[in-house]
Length: 454
Image 1 (tube, rainbow, N blue to C red):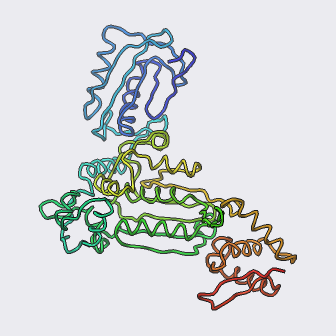
Image 2: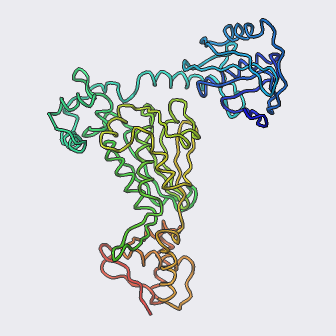
Image 3: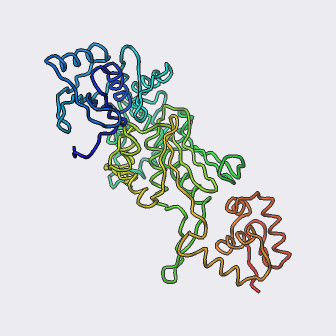
């Protein structure tokens, strides 16, 4: 430790002035274990990092060890030693343990930032439930009542081919993928290759919604999808790309579509949601598209004690559904090295990751249409200026700009992108037609818009 540096309390570090604070120190040990399964505690350092030093007698370390042993359940075996910090004697206690929940003086605590919070009975029950679930992984558990007839042999055949392997029959292929045991199918087998997985798992679904504003007050569209995991991943990606701005750039004479949110980042976030979600929870993967952002939500906080800071700074991943993850890896949907988060942040650096309740949420910031592609907004603005000398409202300019990019755009899509109701879009279109700026060619279904140049 640099002589100028000060230790700072965190989720895995607690500082105490002296062993007179041994009891709250033991509570801190339990709180850190319950949150992160590891931590350090120092005696002889104030909570602001000032090193005071600690009187250490013959029995001091032994007394600390005995007090920890007597007051923490289940028992832990920490490293307790005398250390010199800035020339002063201090006591360092380093500890690890995964047999949560731990109790201090008969009560359970959890670490929140640098504070120790007493767990409620409900929170304690949730920890015990999650522990039991982790011991019996959902994806490897047997799906009762499911038989080989409930699977799609075509899906399995196509998967084996995509994985670059030889198809050797339905049951043999399932054995190689560890999806069947004593002719009984695992949950993973059914939710990945089932004809109708929702028959067995009501939460095998995807919910998508598009909102007109930055909150949920006005819904433009809402859809629900069921099916196997691969189908749901595909539907989630399609829904997002359909409901965000698509710009364009030119490579030579070829037009290339450019979504306002990187397509690879979207794919990684969607795949992670289905791979790492807690399937014991009765809920779907949810996609919410707002005027200023896109959220992908799944039940299940980070697994294995990982923190958001760790997944952002380290290429590390803990798998809640190891079997599902292995299937994804077979066809390169995910990498074993936990590079998915790094890919997202490389493609979309402003991506936000949050844990709220038992949900993990990935949020992509939407870009204004002017920023999509290579100066698309600038070119559209110039074109709008060339087209008409009429005075247009801001909403009418946006409508013209969107139509110039996509003449097949629907009034619903216009409403979503402009951020107004479908009725308001229709009113503006009527005014634009009267000004002879816009016309409709062909039928309502199958036709397209044309901006009239003057």
